[in-house]
Length: 430
Image 1 (cartoon, rainbow, N blue to C red):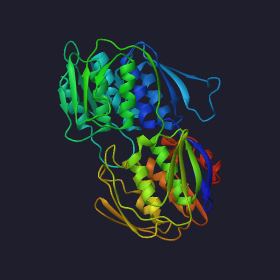
Image 2: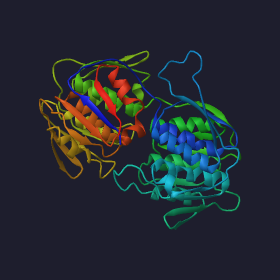
Image 3: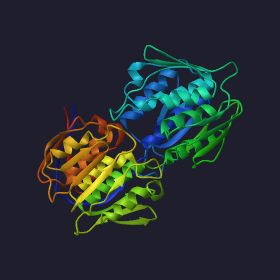
């Protein structure tokens, strides 16, 4: 199994091109199941999760083509891909495919809307909490679906004539459930109102894709989405938005090490809460025409308290990276995780660097140290794994991050992007 070796102490200087957002690309790919015409996506990141979802979609009968770069496109752009689900040949998403990635469960919405039936394995993915699918099933039931659980599979059937529009009021915000019901409602009969919908930029990217495919959706970007169901959707060409989590990750890496990095293609409006927090640590942020510039002078890192929250709040997917940054602050900070109940597995690994972190329930108290020391560490989930890389970039001596397949799920060419900015980092095979 591959590892990453790095030697800390180098400032980061240069440019990093921000890849397409994984959390937008995956549901956009799934949206191809809603039409028998081609859906063309630009700026799709080259990630293990994207490859895994390709296998799942191909199992349903989707033809997938990957195109070369267009003339004039720069090296850092993502893939251009065409997804054509002319015929759905299988409405079952099997355990051996779905168990490897939670987002693959979202195929249940389009399959049920288009084919009126679906049999989807209960999902897998990172072990950062139970993350049940009850909100998904609640929403589908509101649209008239009959739901059964059979030997680890969710078996869903639409009423005769297809799903029927309804009011779906989520008791709590769920990105995955919002994606799923939004897609299902686009082909339902009548009007669906989704209350307490997620507002993440990835939701907006998918909603605008559905509109480009012929869906009728209002309230995009708000807590209430109204969907007027249509009989049929058509093909479209859509751009995947830049990855705000990758943007925040590299911004925190630059703040941790010092230096001056331009995050090319980054959009500040997609993570303003995180940028505001980062500015409070003493990091200088400037918005330029082609991205966000991140600098840190020699005054050190100031401690800042933070709570994770659904968008537009501080993202839970940046909590581990921010904790790594706080391990070298000049004081004490508190981090409160409000989204997932088991997202502090990286604490034990950060402690191997010499970090001082105490966890009490959902609150982690971080007492900053002037210096971390390199260590052998192990990735526990996607975002935790990159927090170990951030710590290693600033630690004295050599760090080896083991079990990095989690990194490949969500970060494109991580070592290459960092090494081009002066990091001493390499991938070790085996």
